[in-house]
Length: 146
Image 1: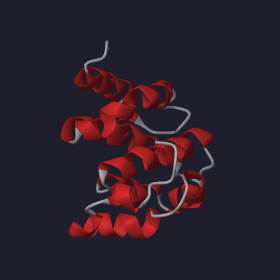
Image 2: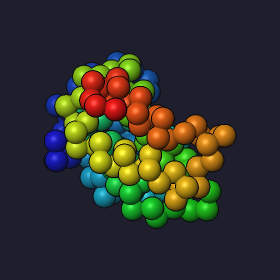
Image 3: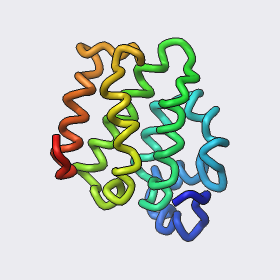
């Protein structure tokens, strides 16, 4: 989905307090519009992605991806951004595969990039885990060749 999610794609958001908050922050905004919000607090924005209806998530995960790939970070943000992106992908595969499987092939090159460039994101393995191992688990859970 390349267009900003309309009300139809947010269906059911009002039934969940976390989805309502995500709606308040994201609704009507493009992924480009959301870049400053990701920069202000990537951990919070990632948490909101967890609770979005599927179609909204399938749009806004690419905003997080863009933020991670563009690397326009404040001090100490790069590790959190990269970790949030790769771990959210794995979490969705395990907990809500129908939300990510339709778009996974489009995300895989970026997930692989993050996995292979953990040092670039200054994400210490002792703190954030090994991104290459997380990426391998993504491939395994998704049924791709690891």
